[in-house]
Length: 164
Image (cartoon, rainbow, N blue to C red; front, side, top):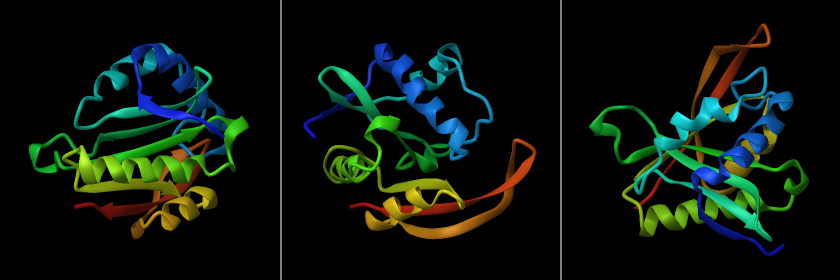
């Protein structure tokens, strides 16, 4: 599959939200109902040259996105990022997640001042766990029963990787 990875623009936000919402029924994110584009405008504005959001594009259509969000709002953590990856349902299982994580690695090692990338993955999300493990991320811990979604307490793995 031929695709390009580029920085996301505000015009990509509706498709970013659409792809995110495809994952809501899978219970792999924190939402129990779909989100709206208007709810994510402020979130989108947080991304900058040190903590970017990228999209994968095929024939002008966004098919996936990957974001390095600020990990914690304190300058001591400016060199850390929390990663999020979402792939359009029609493109899952085609190694796009691996390609995006490889792209993030190259950016962290070459262009970004990011030293640590952290992923939070629900313990039931075996596909994401395998993806991150295959790309050199390690399980750094488990946060048991930390969230409540659809009336059910859920646990998260904290996975991470150091760069540079």
